[in-house]
Length: 164
Image (tube, rainbow, N blue to C red):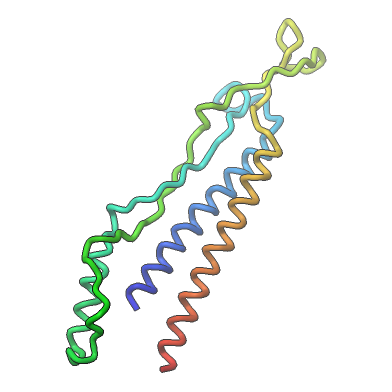
């Protein structure tokens, strides 16, 4: 059961990361025309950085926990042909953080009637591309669906194991 719980935990971290990504996409799209922020200047595009952290949850630790449970069974019941190398595979965890896009700059739009226009008639607008945000939103949505599928499969496996 520990492996299934671990799979659910990793997928839950993925859900959290995709939810944060969706929140940032919504915030970027809502501020596509914000030329004045409380910090001053136009809105600056944000991004979510998602990364894997393999060192935090080593597979060997999960395997040793599972092996402790297997020692209660009769030794003849354990398969001898399947050998797992302890420490060969790491179980990844998912981390995310929200950052201001360092590559984001401002667009200059010519609009001399705008109250924030400079003396040449240009207004600094946020560098938010709606098409790019839509692609990010669809990617986050599909990844969210994939993580929910993993959780549903792990839940079904646990239920099937309990039915034996």
